Image (cartoon, rainbow, N blue to C red; front, top):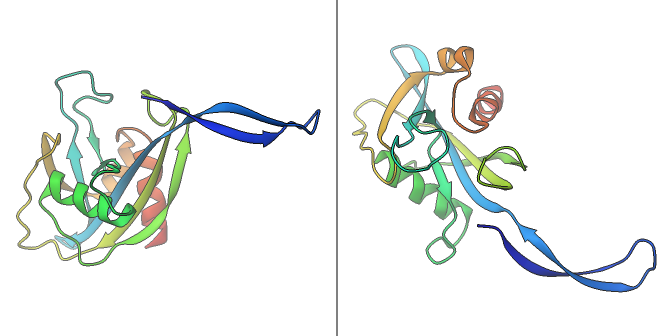
Amino acid sequence: MVTKAPQSARSRTTGQRRTAPISTPFTTVDVVIFSVLDQALQVLLVRRPRDGDQPFAGQWALPGGFVDIEVDADLVACVRRKLHEKTGVESPYLEQLGSWGSATRDPRGWSATHVYFALIAGHGLNLVSGGNAADVAWFAADSVLRKRKLAFDHDGILQSAVDRL
């Protein structure tokens, strides 16, 4: 859902103040969680649900979702909530990777995502799919990058995270 907020700015042509509605984009977070398992860099992915009218149904994606302004005090709180809801994982450390936004990254509308990442110990973690995640699993990062079939623009985000490591 795109909402309109008033905007006050000076017209470039007349110099007069004008008030006009502006569209507000979706605000989301995504998280790239890495681990070294079986002597290979692994990335934690969630499978999007096949039911309903969700975009990229059944495809693998980075864990993430919409910011809930009633619940999330800030972006890090949202990332921690989404990571735990969808995977059962809690990360002691998260670093901001960057922000991505465009009119084409989500078919539901203009979207801006704020991405965090971390390298954690994956041995002994109990992965639990939850929220709207149909499944959760570790995948070899190099294999995922070669196939380039993640939902949304997550292939590019994953590549940026690998490059940052």
